[in-house]
Image 1: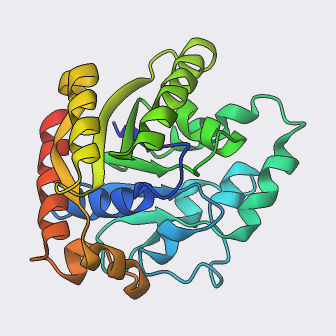
Image 2: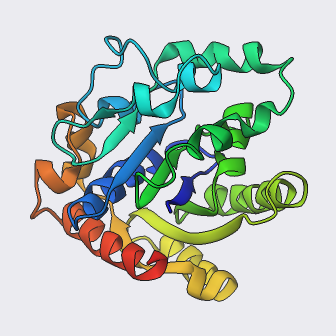
Length: 254
């Protein structure tokens, strides 16, 4: 049975999609069957996986509008080693279309139940907002991984996200748990980064992944080539960090 893990943060620009792509690639490289669901209308996880989102004829929009199942819309990332359910701008209209549907917050959960034995891990890349799309991701998941920068505003937004997770747990998904926090785009020369990192460690303890993802130009370049950094430049500092995170992820969730 799949372990379903949402990768979420209400704040944008925290390397959420980058973490989803590289975790997927790193875990798949260890022989695990991985499905990545791009739940963001921007479709960055789709393009970062080497797929032209404008040419994708079907994807997560069709799943959420219940016109197709995951098994019929998934495609394989050409280089990353995982399957992906793609997203593009059509997904932005899905929320309006779902307003009148009973149980709309659990459509993705129901769709995933049909493929639960096909994968070891399902990673859901949620959009950077508390939308119906994010609620679908959190309702479907067993765990949430939270990527975040070690800066003041990110720390401030973290409390809002934790409150959101508690509300989802109370009303929609009683099994939902925080699976871990990942420090991303970390600059060790910055004293504020160090201070925020220490606060996270003190507050979240063993929920905080030991691996820290540094700021790295190769990580920033990789999506423009449609590749995870693990494949684009496997010896870069960013790639080595994501390799370490993938190993820690597998230790934690298997």
